[in-house]
Each structure stands twice: as structure tokens, then as C-alpha cells.
Image (cartoon, rainbow, N blue to C red; front, side, top):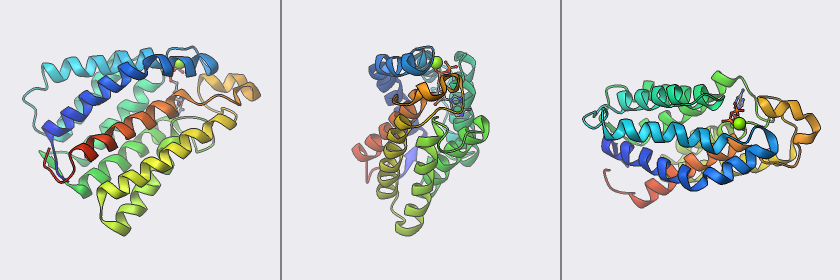
Length: 218
Ligand code: ADP
Ligand code: MG
């Protein structure tokens, strides 16, 4: 597929909508492991992004510039740990899409791998620490191998989202070693990580977006 900057903006708007729907659920998850604000912080960040999309970013056609702006806006709006984590993800994605008004299958694969790696580098968490890395790392690995083998982005992304879902689910049964929830130690077992969940929701929103628009330039 080919994703134009307009398509990328449409996707970001779908994330805004999704977060509003999942806000309470994300807060419920964070209530069991942290301070109960994950849905609210995500909402604050994505509402700020929407405001930018409707104003300063209207004319922007460079997917790189657009992604940098999304990352920076999110960072400035969000006070909690996910601010710099997601911001770094989108800014790393921006590096792979610099000066590009249209992203092809290869560009999109690179974008999402860079996104996942950016979050990991920023937070220094490993798989098994009960964070969003448990969703993002298996996702990125699967995306890379599946796209290399098939050269079919939609198939690769869909397999990668399945790996992301498994990773998200795996956070239920493990002890938190990073972030606020690590203070709970053994008591963190049994609850699913909110960041791993929001990361999965963002990826599955993109999957839904490409399925709705496959074989088109959007
Ligand atoms: P806070 O913990 O500051 O209240 P949020 O509730 O918005 O922030 O986000 C919590 C989520 O942040 C966790 O569920 C976890 O997935 C993620 N997180 C925290 N620390 C890290 C880290 N070092 N690396 C990756 N993700 C992290
Ligand atoms: Mg929190």
C-alpha cells in the first residue's frame, strides 16, 4: 500500500477516537498496577495531537515532519512516563520517513520497527519487565521477519499484531520490573500492563486502518 501524509493524519485521528473509547479501560488497568491515570494521560496527549492536526499541521505533507510534530506534541502534553516513551517512538518513525510525502510498504515496515525500537531505547526495558516493550518487541521482530519473507506489508503487519497481542497478554502473569508498578513486586502478578495494552491498541488501530484502505493510496 501507499500511505500519504493525509492517510497518516487520518490514522492519527483514528488513534484519538480509539483512545477516547478505551480511556476508562486503560485507567482501570492502571488502577490495579499504578496510579490509575494511563487512560487520562493518553487522552490528554492525543487530544493535543488532534488540536495540532486541525491547526498547524493542516498543510504539512512531509510524513517525517508530521511524525516529529506528533511526538513533540505528545511529549509536551503528557506528564507521566509514557510521554517520552511514545514521543521517542514517533520521533524515530519520523527519521525513517523524513522528506517523504508518501510511504510505501518498505517505508512503513521501517517506520514501525523504528517506533518500537525507540520506545525500548528510551525506557531501557526488556521483554518480561511488564511494560509496553512486551507488546512492541515481539511485534517488531515478527514484522521484520514476516515482511522479509513475504514482501506483503498487510500480511506482515497483521501477523505482527497477533504477536503484539500475545505479548500484551503475557504481561498478566509476570512481575513488574520497570516503572511505577515495579514497587508492587509480586503483587503485580495477575494484572495486565496498561502501557502494553495501549501499545497493542495503537497497532491494532493501524491494522484496521490499512485493512479498510488496502490496495488504495490513502
Ligand atoms: P505513570 O506510570 O507515570 O503513571 P502511565 O500510567 O501513563 O505513567 O503509564 C504507565 C505505563 O508506562 C506502564 O504500564 C508501562 O507499560 C509503561 N512504562 C513505564 N516505565 C517504562 C519503561 N521504562 N519502559 C517501557 N515502558 C514503561
Ligand atoms: Mg499511571
